Image 1: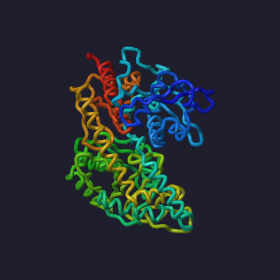
Image 2: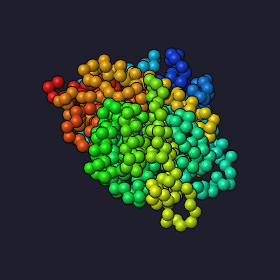
Image 3: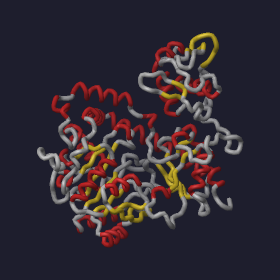
Length: 517
């Protein structure tokens, strides 16, 4: 038991004093006991909004537990939004107050108030709430940020600073540090069957930066159009359009992009470049069939074309090993685009391109008006005015890969996501047995078909009123007409304990948003 004499909110709240505040209930791991105690104190108002909690060392001493127990509990509550943490400041109760359901002693989320019995509503019903303010996050495209390998990254950053050479610190190579390019070439060869030397690799700020660089190079080489999957990730379409490439949509099905339709679209538009997701199509969830992989490569060679392979979540396949990268089938025609946004987080700001040297180019000192290199496919080369990510970040990631920490993180993440996907499908089958879910056992999302009479937009709004963030499939289509209604459900950023309640609330929203239900 820890006691408290409350100070002013702008001071650190003492949990050692006269009146009981936190009591560890003895059920389960100490970390879970402490997290439950803090949630309950916040829910009951005994820890008000903005109240500062003591440093982890002080609370650990007061409770008689290890500091690790406190830091882990604090980290879990920060991820849930119950607490807020800022560098150089105390950990405080979030300004949004209680943002999650009560957790039982067994560790499972207890059902919150039902939508019809006074469930929280957005403060301004006329507007759709920001997803970050909703209690249950079923939005796609976000990894589990609660389980980042923070300590491993901190060690890698320390090692990068201590071991960096004067040449490293100059940061002169616009393609990225030689050390990271060598590590990436070796790892991608082992994990994705990529065929590349370090000079075939360029370090970028992420997938969007990588596609932007290649798009500018294509335009400089005379390309005017880009074939894209429909549906597909809209950010990369926008990036290509910003580079002045016309977007030509190509339909997809359960076997990935329709290569027959792609060839016809290329003939109509004159396009000689295509952006595809062979390992796991977003958002439909299909995998490009072997015959179509070969057909895509034949097309690229026949028209002197280029294929951009977005490898956004290929590390996460749960029923078998991921398919090899398309790049290994045609290293002279395919540019692999990858990043850490799904395996770690977008904030790490590191991505990569792997492609033919005539496109990637060689470093050429001299006139800054030119890019990295010239060549038949490269045109003016990659934009020299866009510097690579900070050198120390690159060296830290190289160390994370080299000592095995990155692969250990991926193995743990695959196990976690596999279990979470199974739990999501089980909950959907129980609550909405009549609605099919599509997509292979991979990635961080699945597609839930809605009843034919459902209105996607209305379902999304009703779900938001029930504190559930979902995204309509229509957001990802280039041509929106004639498609059946569906939702793209992400499970990467969802807290496991609240998954059943999230699905129950979503099911209620779907029934309410379906005509004739």
